[in-house]
Length: 315
Image (cartoon, rainbow, N blue to C red; front, side, top):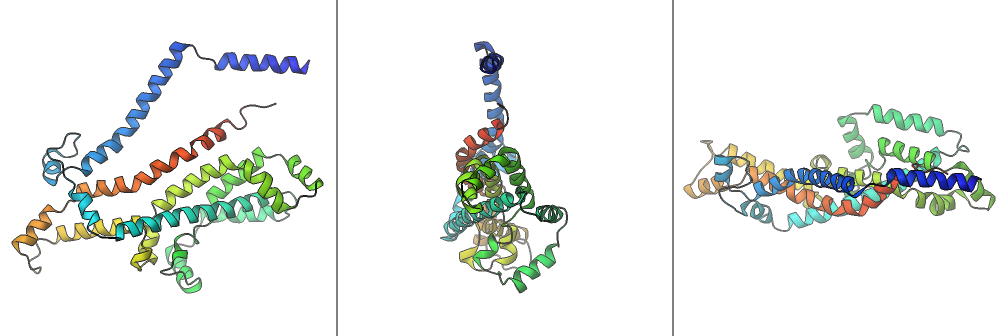
């Protein structure tokens, strides 16, 4: 009897979810239009990055610039090896920081859902408190520099932000709602300890949650420029975003002070300053910064789909 009812429910669900060709074509067309609209700002940024300064001054931001130039990209390449060095630093910082962060937060989330962990409520409130209140910039700087001795080291890039309270609560909620307690009890009866349960049972089932939180961490770490600005002086450790921010600020400073009488100015130097890209350089920085994220997203897409469908089918 139960088997017949299950089949009837499955038939009803399949019939409800099945679309006729006309509806399928309409929905597909709408999604394609929305996807194209979402790509338009990115394409506009790319066009502006190739636009000349005169074109931007005359037409502003335009899909069809008066002239095409690679001057903004040359300005970045003239920094020598610094761009590629900063790219490597950013890749290492983002990958190592995200992996370590997911490892620590997933273990923490596993502990917070265990009923045998008697102080789990205290630690959950502690984590939630840090999400609402922070010590501020000055105490954080003093702790990182004077206590932890992380100034101008590679560790400063990912150790202070290793645990995110918001992402930890997301993982804890995911583990609590998607993994039943009976699974832990069965593993304990079979003789498995906590670390083996975490590695062989919890981690494989946490892939959708880890992918979601991991993408959040990748985007946040890749776009982080403030940490490098505060703590990094060694050129070999400067992240990409910090380096690009310094280049942009240097160009703006030179252009703003070009008319200062105290600065010696020759006709050749004046011509070079006027030829320096400003708006196109901003867009070039945006293009260079967003490319790795565009390539990283497809690897997480299938886990996002899995995360959306978890819990939609109940036995």
